[in-house]
Image 1 (cartoon, rainbow over the protein chains, first blue to last red):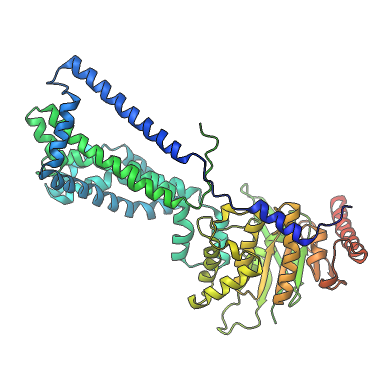
Image 2 (image 1 turned 90 degrees about the horizontal axis):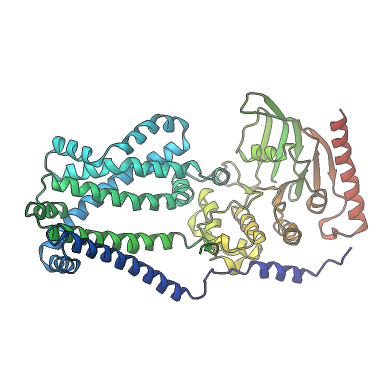
Length: 285
Length: 258
């Protein structure tokens, strides 16, 4: 039988094995650059296709990309842009927050209580299939041309999608951690905040991505129906003037804002929210 | 005085197909105060079930479980600290936040958290790692976090459910030695569930062996070797280990031939 190594050696061995390796990959700057270049290349490809279409169909149907970008700049510099953008963004965000406030408890209930799942499953899946256009029509007929109908249409269109995402996440909540928190007599608020929500965070962030995208689609529809503010209204106006250039330009301004939210805000939240997880991306090429 | 009394506890589980599986058939034993009691038995014999019933995570079908804590000034139910087989940490919280999570659950006043975190993380030798996230630590260190979390609530009885069985051999041996010395230092009453005879003989001042399912207590041993003298290659230690092992084996054989 081999001699037992002295204690200290054992201790060092354990520590050496345990030395926390903050998964800093080398060349992360080079990688960021590569990512940026790939993104730029995909935008360039898009503009190239656009330009070819312009050559084929002519300025009336497909305006010159450069002229359109100039129009975008003109819109951005005009005083109305901020007002219109603020109106649309407010409708998106209020509707989104309303939907999220309902979806989180509903999704958790569906994932953890068999009866809640049985009861809500059908309406959620039905709700997922109802087009935003129908909700927009119903909302305007019901609430008239008020902000409430925009909030309502956005919230109810995206709610099933958010709830289904969170429901799926809640189904895989770790029972062992629930037992652990019961063993330490954790109260319900702490169980929700410290144990349940952190496990659902990646699902909530994914739902946020889809949800914001969907919310914007609904908002434009609602605004086109007869609001007198917002990006959708401006697109409708451009449509009435049959100015393809302005339709595209207004749409692009919103795309830019949404891309900022996606990569800036959500990306930042995601990076912060997953700091506890070692990066395991070695397998990706 | 702090102890656990388990008296004629029965427990059955129902399979999804409706058949009934009796796991515990009148288990009775008592822990030894200020020392470690080991509950030893083959896997699947219901050891962990006993622990879960004591911790209130499962309900017994019949019998009595009594947990008495020496000094709970509030007079409320006394505290139990639970160390699980997997560390069961909140991976999104730092080491010290994981320990604080248990303090919050157990209603320890916030003012006491600081000193307790410092004290118990020091005891398990994790002071330098208190701001790390668990997934950046080794398995052995994560299990130490679990131990610190259970100790920090200053439990009347420390419950441990095969806490070393998923570790590599070296980490497990080291953690067993540390657990023994920490429990002695704190005069901690503890109940450890294990299927490892050597571990039971090394850690247990009292060893309760369970027969195979449906379980009853097969034998209760008092460890003749004082904790300070226990070492892996001491002849007395090996002798006692053989005695316990034989009894566990004979029970298992009787069962399988019956």
